[in-house]
Image (cartoon, rainbow, N blue to C red; front, side, top):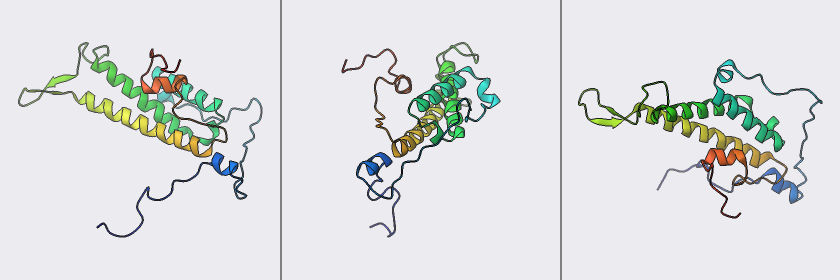
Length: 178
């Protein structure tokens, strides 16, 4: 039997703001954040993101995706920068692995072990997996913030959303419903 005390993640899950407002809870107030017309409230894009086209494209798409849902002001800009950078680094690693990058011009999936000469997975494979894991973790945080705080209906499994299609790797795959 485990030691006593509270466990992380144990207990009843928190209700979203939208659900609490629909139930008429008196202590829940939906706040609106006024933004002056023509005023940009976004943090300036760091130079390391501007220099990487994939990161800049990913950041632009993520910001637009959040702006459409009126949730851009809920997300820390550094979180979006980290997401864009990790996604770009994953794409770069995958480009190298498939022989299209600058590293060696051939597939880098397998390399020779430095002492035994036996084939082994390239360190780029592990780097690619780590970058993808970090990008997915950060995007999960973004979706949790949206689900908890967005006042309009939100479903993370929207199949027709271009960003969701890109993130899930379903490019070119038709929706099963339509």
